[in-house]
Length: 196
Image 1 (tube, helix red, strand yellow):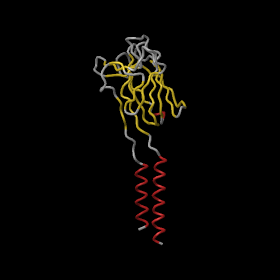
Image 2 (cartoon, helix red, strand yellow; image 1 turned 180 degrees about the vertical axis):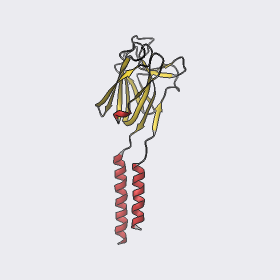
Image 3 (cartoon, rainbow, N blue to C red; image 1 turned 60 degrees about the horizontal axis):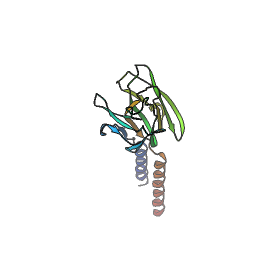
Image 4 (cartoon, one colour; image 1 turned 135 degrees about the vertical axis):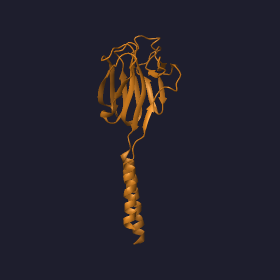
């Protein structure tokens, strides 16, 4: 009986530790074209404009390919449209990637930068290199490991950058696994003690 109980506990603990995180993708297709507020929470992720002014707001823009993008300002009111976008995940996430669209730059030009943070500490900076106007550019930050915040600075494209398809996986919480496992072991020990 003891061996069976220990095998069951081991299988449960291994199953919890081996569980995979679910990937989440945020696209902006469900939103109508137009201005949003300066702070929007979508699927638990906070998108906000850094240093907003009266003429800036998060904006959804539907381009000619019928793909909706998030902009960090309303380029029809403010040019250049170079407001930084803050993306706060609220907790550490892995495998972060997103698309950006640079309207006014040629292929190979630097459109801006992405700073990735974990608990307020900079873990990496990546240049945004344009594939050319109206061509989506994939930014893959998965090599940086867990992050909980991105600050995207589009300072080199006068029309600003459009963002889409933010994809990430939630980091599993190992402390909960250890707490659960130690609780189970304690229960087994208690049950065994009662038998003796």
